[in-house]
Amino acid sequence: MVRGPSSGDGMRSSVYYLASSDLGPAHADLMDLDAAHASWPDESSADLRSRRPRARALDESDPMAYGMMATDSPSPARRSDGGWGGAGGRWLLWPLRAMLWAALLVVAVRGVTAIVLNQHATASPAGAGTKSAADGQFPVALAEAYAAEFGRVYLNASTQTQAQREQQLAAFVPASLAAEHPDLGWNGAGQLSLQSEQVAGIAVQDPENAVVTLLASVNGQLMELGVPIAASGGGVVVSGEPAWLPAPAQSPVPAAAAQRPDPAAQSELASELPAFFQAYSAGTGLTRFLTPGASLTGLGGTVSFDGIAGLYVPHGGSVRQITVSVIWQLLSLGAPTDTKLQVTYGMSVVQQSGVKWYVKEISASTEAVGEQ
Image 1: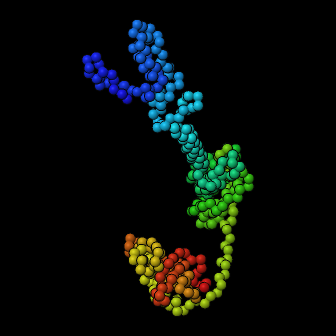
Image 2: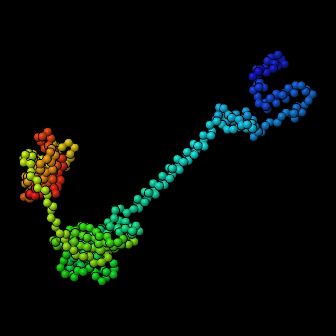
Image 3: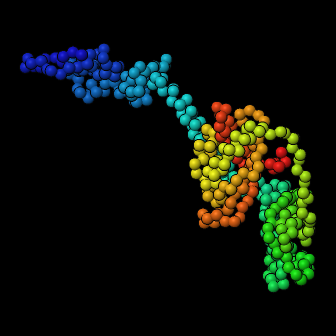
């Protein structure tokens, strides 16, 4: 930059002008016009304006203009044809935009999938057996529950409630069967009294038919009742009259291998177990009898310890699986009663330091002490 020329009164102006080297072509042309004005004093200002080069439009190539607009790049590039090639680093925007859209697409797809799967799980019926006929499978759980409700009505009958029973049975069977046999085989005399009932099993014949077996105690006798169930269209019905079946036969207990007891360990446990069962009956102070990590709740004072009726301890190492028969005395409001009950436990005990036995687990036994 250079200082402007001196004024007519001898003072030098403080205004600075850009040197011609600092100006673009348009600015250099303006300086040439000023020089021409000085050398052509006779020409009017209008004539000089007509000689002035026109200003370039914004779309014309002007490196300085493009350089000033490209503020996001410290070193703007120039195309070979004189135009602007773009700001440095701007090419990175497109890959970043593509990555952003891809991420948004993944989130959207996962969200829709989660909604669809959640709706499908919600719409699915509860229970492994309650599947619709459209799935080609018999609705096992629904049929079992339906047969159990039917059994509670069918296995209770008396002359005083006959009309009510007929009305209740009609809700379980087809209308044609209810009209023809409103009592479903009962002759209207005597009575049936149901004490207990539960589902014993189900035999599925095809996707639409099955027989549910109920184990029940009627008039003090154990029996089974076979209930035919038909399923279609998401519903079930007792398709015919039920069948009275015998109670399940008793099975002989598998013979256990005869083993001689360990007299020494049996004597040690016979003296240690009474204190444990006293704490077990009360449900307090059990920790000192247990192995590290074991946890027992106890019976909470519902019974009191009366004695050990039998004990079997097999030979083995420091860990033994023993069988104990215990006599409990039942309590009523914390006071002993005359009722006593002998029960049998299977226990896992551990001997520590070769001296004392500790309880690891207690549960029902699969064998009686007398059968050892």
